[in-house]
Image 1 (cartoon, helix red, strand yellow):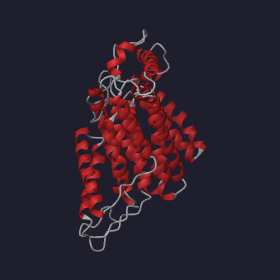
Image 2: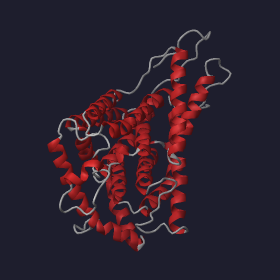
Image 3: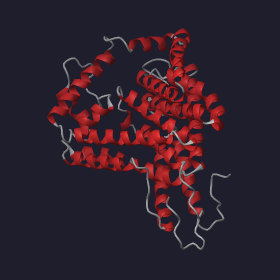
Image 4: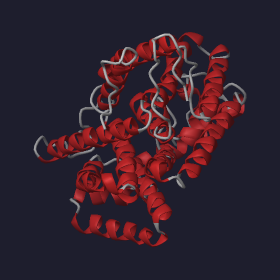
Length: 400
C-alpha cells in the first residue's frame, strides 16, 4: 500500500505536499540544521493549511499538554530573566514542540513506519560517513572528533543514540523491519564509538539495555559481551577514553563536578524562575566553583540541573511530568502489536536521552530535540487511522 495518499483525490494534493515536506524534514535532521529548519517551516505551514481546508482541530498525544505547560514556564522564566533580550531569542526553541502535532497528524498509520525507515536509513548513511571521517580523514583525536555532517560531535553522537534506539526497537520487536535494522546496527555502533563521546556511549548502553530488558531479561548478558569485545578490539584512543570515565583526576570529570556546584548555587539564588534561558553562560563566571577547569561554560552538562538553574524548579517539575506521561503512554502501547516496536524505540530514546543527559545538555540541542520528539510521537501516530477524504470537498475530514 502506498504511503502517500492519492494525489488525484481532490482533498489529497495538500496532504501529499504536507507529508512530502515532513518526510524531507525527518531526513534532513541528521544532515543539515538549516535544511531541516526550512522543511519544518514548510511542513508547519502546510499542516495549518490542511487543518483549515479540512476544518479539523489540531490534535496531539496526551503528553503534548505537558510540553505546552513547559513552554509556558519557559516564557515565565523569560519574563524574569536577568537579561530578557538574550532569553527571548533562545526561547524560540519552544516552537520546535510543534513537531509533535505535525507528526501526529501527517504520519498516521503506515506512514509512521516510513518515517522510521527514513530515519534509520539516513542514520546509517551518516554512520558510514563518520567511519570514513575516522579512517580516512583522520578525525581520530579529541581535538578533531568524528562529527558526520553535523557541526559538533556532541550533536552527531546524540543523534546516533536516538537512531540506535529506533533501529534496536525495530530489530527486537518488528519482524518486517528486522533485517534492515540488523544490517545497519553495526555501522551505527561503530560510528558512535568513534566519536569518543562518553555521554553518548552511556546513553546508547541505557537505550539498548532497556530494549533487552523489555524483550527478554536474559538479553542483558549481551551488554558485558559487547563491552568485552570493545575493550579487546578497539583502538587505544577509544579504550583510553573509556578508562578516563572512571578517572576522578580527568579534567573534564572534575569540571563537571564543578559545574554541578555552580548550578546548585544558581538554583539557590533563583529557585522559582531560574536565571533565564541562555543565561547560564552569562552568569557562570559569577558562580564558578574554585575547582572548575574551564573559565566559562555555555551549559551545565546535566539536563535536569540545567533546566532548574535556567528556568526554575517549577519548570523542571513540569518537564519531569512530561517525561512521566511519555513513559506511561509508551508502556501502554507496548502491548499492542502494531505499535510495540515504535513504543519500545520511544522508551529507549527516553532512556538514552536521560542517561546521556546526566553528562550533557542534549535536550537543548535543536537537532537532538527534533528527532527525539519525532520518535516519541511516532508510536501514537501509527495507531491513528488515515484521514478520510471528503465526498464533495465541503465536508470535514476526521481529525482522529
